[in-house]
Image (cartoon, rainbow, N blue to C red; front, side, top):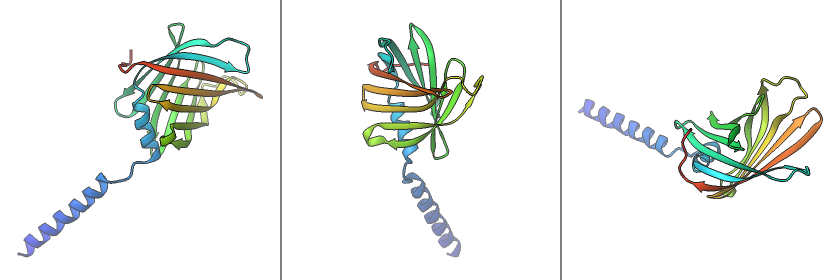
Length: 179
């Protein structure tokens, strides 16, 4: 009977521990990454440099999940990919690596409000920066306005100059693949 009692006790402890894992609260970063997974598909819209006299340019985008670990965003102008961002978790943090023409800024989510669709990222560091004055993204703001409408604002700095690129996208298809 003692052995049976120990087995029942052990089974109860295992059950409680498993139940705790299943009901562990989702972190804001994990919830935000899940929200980004929902962007999978093809998007079209415009990009404009704020404060510039240049007219808006056509832009398209493709979002897809890479494994279950990351969401890939490819921004396309003139039919050619121009920028790619990869969103992923790093422990409890949501991270973004933005692959530009010549460098790769790495950012960390500084403000997440999943209910309002707000994801703000701040600069952590950058790889392949040819000089301290070379242009690079130092902030990104995503606004998930609706299931089929998002905006992205990239803040770019080059030396002591700062500019912003504003991208407005609407979904045209829910199917997306890496190619």
